[in-house]
Image (cartoon, rainbow, N blue to C red; front, side, top):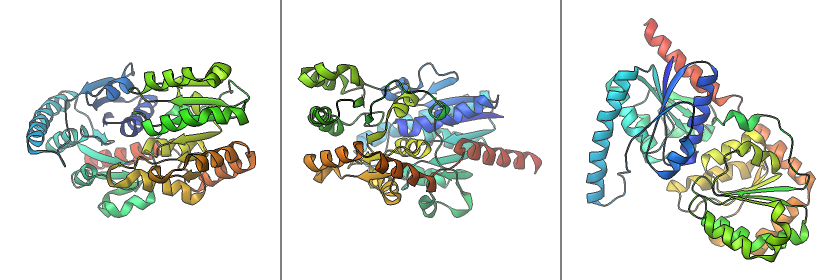
Length: 364
């Protein structure tokens, strides 16, 4: 079969798309990937072993009139360009992982009669995905709680695909207790500042701590400079790894006993797949509070502890963090809690359902 994966905007959309692409390539089938032109999209998709097309698109909802008009023209232009790409490539199926770029790809696909699907990574879908769900043939959801938002006859519970390399067994580089801090593909200034304040106190209590900190592309130089001002950094710099973006997330998760993160969809999926205990601080301005809801799912089962950014008290946060890092028993209990949410092979579920859909059309 020939596939189109489309995703853009953030790692939360792009990374499940890459996971699907990896599974398609493992099966020896063809694909192209259609994304946007933002720096994070180019960064995540660079040097991938499949063809990537880029479309210039913008959001329309909730913007001033002049911006809506400009975005509307870009959308029309993108639909025409995608239609030409699809007519030449002749795919059997399109899977949209979200982001503005998914809209023109799905629209062009429907105009050409190609089977289409939407994959929703969060518990609560955004407006674009609610709109797309009316157009597509299938809607794949990552959490059972999402079912009520979509046309019932289209919904399949698949879970959220994660990249194959995250699941490979590997040895640890260090023997201390590992802490991974990350704010998602775009970074999180609040998390960066919080850890900059607290890391000296952590190393006073846990001198064998191994700290991995993903800052985000835009905040890396500032955060690195702040670390380097600290005397604790000079003492423990071999045990502090700072990255703008972590390319080898399999290594980072493998080194970590505990994760501090936002609650974006890809982070949640990876925590579930790898059964990693976490402290989650949802991004408070995420559309529809979807990160709050994502975090609550993990907090409810006991795999994570949730803090709200607006009323987070640093001393209380530090106390919780120290308690977790000092208790292997608690971390093991949090790991076991994930068993209730784990889905085997989400990529396989999505591709299998779409294959049935395409073959059903051929046989009709």
